[in-house]
Length: 334
Image (cartoon, rainbow, N blue to C red; front, side, top):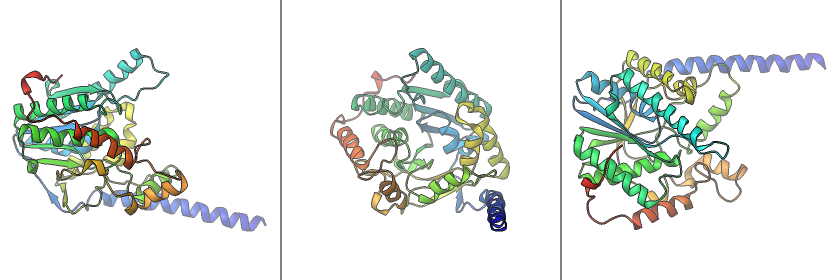
């Protein structure tokens, strides 16, 4: 009996060592093969519109640095305050967390060479603040006003991907704001962060919980006919992007670096049918897996947000959208 047990333990140990070696090799290779590569950055103004503090570095760390290197300017808009409300938190504690998250982003931007005045915190409530049409319309107006004032050569935002409701709503806001400002969508770029489509990503994260060396899983776009590209970043630029994650101490910098320390990835912005949700769940193995094993009737994209929720929220927003252009004079960015 004991010999058989030792053989099993030996095989388990060898498999564990092999997986760690495989993770090391994969991680070394992942920094190189992003194809195709391109560079859309110019020496003008780049506007980055994201939901949370740290998304700016995840989505566009390389693009921001490259724009500044070319003599340009960078502005960043954060649509929500980045702090989830908990019953155990007092209002004072919540405000302290908001200030801390904002200070982390300001430190990151300062490290890049972006001044405080170029950071615009709209401070809508995390996850809940941008579900009411009146607040969404105001956020659209604030972003549209900045687009008109700055006339950026490009706008970068998060993709519509079913990973986090704030990311998806920010995509919606940028779409409406570009329309309101008369800004061409071929100057708007979207970037992936994370989604609930790929089963492999879910399994890799579960495996990483047991490994000493974690598999890197670069962000991936949802399947699309729109071509994507990676920013043509050097090893030094990638290393700098990775080093900047240290500023986000509340968000586990090592985990951020492991998951997002790769070249920026972009594709041209395309306005989807928001009410249909980011993807058809019938073609996602992960969605079906979660539906089968965790939720017998419906599988949430994030925190209970289902396809039906997307239909309800975005249909209401479209139905209540204001006619004509926004009056920019009545809106102010914080």
